[in-house]
Length: 168
Image 1 (cartoon, rainbow, N blue to C red):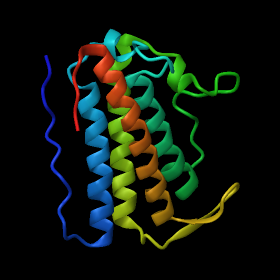
Image 2 (image 1 turned 90 degrees about the vertical axis):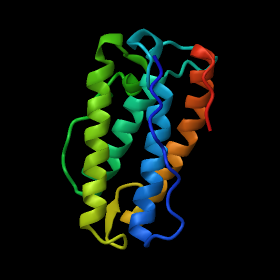
Image 3 (image 1 turned 45 degrees about the vertical axis):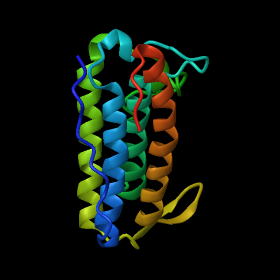
C-alpha cells in the first residue's frame, strides 16, 4: 500500500546552508517516495534494461553520502557498507529483499550524519581529495545534489515499470 511521503518544495528565501540542506532533503524525499510501499522483492526487481533497482539506488546513495562526508570530508577510515574488492558494484548487485528495512535505516543514518556535518561546518571549509585536489564542503553538497538528481531520474523510470506509479 502506497503511503505518500510528504515532500514540500524548499522555501524560496533561506540562507545558503539552510537552502542547501532543504534541497538535499527534497531530493532524498524524492527517492524515499519512489521506494515507499514496495515489498522487498519489488525493491530489488530489475525492471529496466539498465539492471538498476530502487534498493540498489538507495544503497549506492548511502555509500555516496558516507564516502563524501564521513570519509573524504571528515577523514574517517570507514569500510564500505556494500562494495568490496572484487565486487565494487555490490551496492547495486548484491541485493536481498529481506534487507530492505535495514538498508533504508543505513541510508537514513548517513543522511543524518551529512546534515549534522553541514550544520556544524562552514561551507567554505575544505579538505584535500586524492583525485580532485582541494574541495570545499559546498562542492561536496553540490556533488550530492547531482548524484540524487541523476539517480532520482532513474528511480522515476524504475518505479513506473514496477507498478505504474509516476511522480514529479
